[in-house]
Image 1: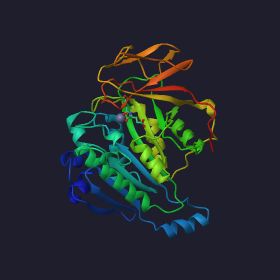
Image 2: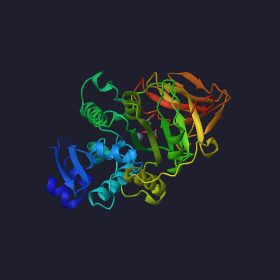
Image 3: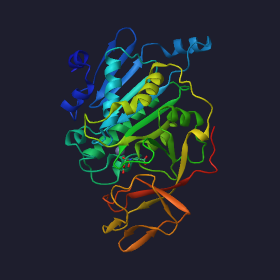
Image 4: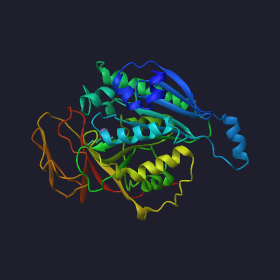
Length: 355
Ligand SMILES: O=C(O)CCC(=O)N[C@@H](CCC(=O)O)C(=O)O
Ligand SMILES: [Zn+2]
């Protein structure tokens, strides 16, 4: 496997050829990077400079502390643009055209679902984190969620104490969106939002951010809450079949991730709310009955606003109406199990704290 990967530089193909149970192996790239494959779809790149050396040069003002960066894709198997984007970055790293100056962990979330061409095989992986995988009958996604938690734990626990942590969980949305690219900021439990991160997202072309209003069982919340990482679920556009993504739409995000990984200056300005659309989640509407339907059409875009009193959905005969003066909908999906989120309703963010 080691020789196959060193020769082909194609980690995605290796992952798809071994959708479960790939044996761990490692190797070095030149004199600069330690590469460790931990499992199917799990690859770590670590700069071969000791942390102490980094600290010394930091004192000389030359280097910043080592960052630890998780980039995940394919938590939903049919969301292909993030898979292609991460594939390009991994191939560049393996080909040594891109050199990692920070610690990096790539996670290809659900390889069997990629092969299936579906969001998931048995169960939505992105509802199984923070231990939710243990609360029900086991299946492949529950096993994978537990392992992904362990890999994130191992990666962040080996991070230098003073190095910042990041987790960008990359997705694409089922529907088209009025704001093509947007990020979900996991509930921070009263902590302020990071203005620097919001400006980083804006520089990636992700100019819309939703502040979540409660804990969730998503992957980004797991890293944010459990490991104090700057973590986000990032929606890069609309779902497309593999190979049919217009990769020119991801030039800015690829450029900014490349800069981040390679330690180049990010050239971020001060936090400027005029450069971003900031929403807060007003409420999450969870499905109560199998007999659930929306009143609006399947092609209504994310971020469409509805006025107070408008009937958004019917749940077992109960009408669900817009409560605020106006609510914008995101991720409407009637086809989820009872108890799960069918839609998020948003209002413009106000009274938020940014540092
Ligand atoms: O387009 C949709 O309906 C779903 C897109 C998607 O997978 N979104 C994530 C958001 C996770 C979060 O709230 O942080 C998901 O539903 O898992
Ligand atoms: Zn997704």
